Length: 192
Image (cartoon, rainbow, N blue to C red; front, side, top):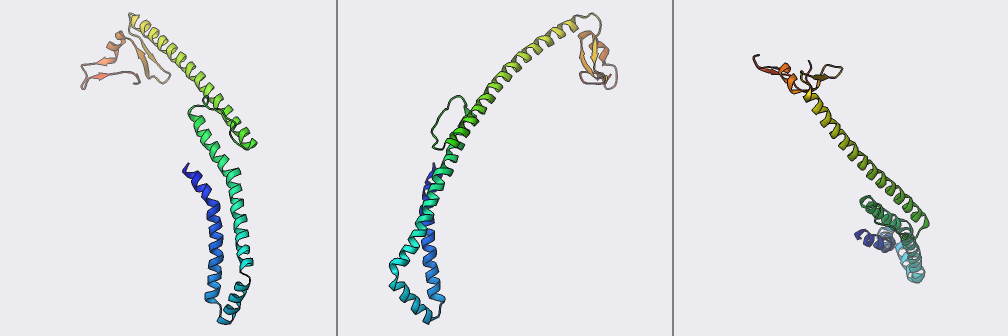
């Protein structure tokens, strides 16, 4: 909300900048111009003070008004949309609104919200599938471990490279060489 205060102050700031620029320009002219021209400039300013005053205020006011309109119709809706999108990433189901004044911003917001909801549903679906697959894998691993340990002979399972993937208790005797110096034990991932 601090940004809103800054944005609201911009038109006034632009108005003041234009007024100060004109005053500085006049002061610069008075300081640097020769006395003869300076004297005629002062007379012109004195005679036409209301006209000069209006010639400064009108462009400054127009600039301030244009700045106000740009902020009101472009920057503030974009800031609101950004805040809403940030909120959507946290909880896409919990927020629905037609609060934006611009129909284009509302349409963009609804599209982003729709995409966020779709992604949320897909994530939930993938999480559920991952849980099921993990449970199935754990169950199959337990069954395979039971089968391998029930085999009465030593059983060693390797991949195509010859690295040990699984072995049973009886194979452990085949994989260890306790009398070697130092003792050697071939385990998972080691090559036969």
